[in-house]
Amino acid sequence: MLIGAHVSPAGGLYKAIERGVEIGADSIQIFNQSPRMWRPTAYTDDDFAAFREARDASRIDSVLIHAVYLLNCASEDPDIREKTLASLAHSLRVGDAIGAAGVVLHPGSAKTGNVDNAIGRAGEVIAEALAQSESCGLHLEDTAGAGGTLGRSFEELAALIEAAGGNERLGMCLDSCHLLASGYDVRTIETLDATLAECDRVVGLDRLHSIHLNDSLTALGSNRDRHAIPGEGELGRDGLGVFLSEPRFQDLPVVLETGSVPGGGVAAVDIELARQLRERWQEVRAAAS
Image (tube, rainbow, N blue to C red; front, side, top):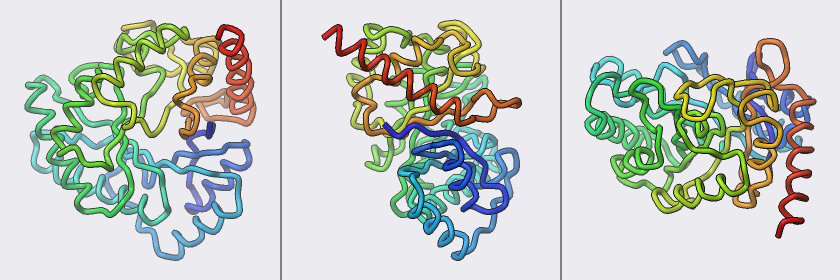
């Protein structure tokens, strides 16, 4: 399991590799531009080469890009749709250039409109962004279910993939906090197994390509996306340990987005805690089998 964290590329793309190494990460996730601005960062071939060189010399085995928060693939506003398409396609092309495992995307929001129509609009934008890039995967992230956000259920994720034409580059990123908040109990071996069985039936676990490991400040079914310091939320250490020891997550990048650093940053101690919880719960699973 490639346990890692979201890190900053401030000062140069290659700096993200350095920051990942500093905290002992095996995988990293970055924003390829400011998450709250439409303007893309104009990287050069030298920037990409420096990143690849730093990665090749490091312990980092997997890199994810997180698409910026402004995107709404389902927007009815032509200007927002155009900006969303341009930004998402740019993220995928940066992913191509640095050899990223995928771009993680919040699919968008229907707001107060019809969800089925919103899924159709989102699918069109996603398909076009994939057509404007080469090979980088696109991982649709499940959402906590607030408002009209898309991807709050496995059925919605499956519908989004279908609406985008079922492209083989499309996959999923499952977030432990979002799963709990949207009503999927993943805190015990039994309930996680049932959740993954449903995911496999509806979407297919062959589409599962990355994991976000986040604890939740809010309870099961709250539909609120509020991350907690790892081990101190509604999943707790045992819930996170169950998640981390799941055999079907074995070879995936597992990214912590929130840690114990003031302001939410992830530290080496958070990575080490995740590894300890994984080892402990692997032993629990082995003893129970």
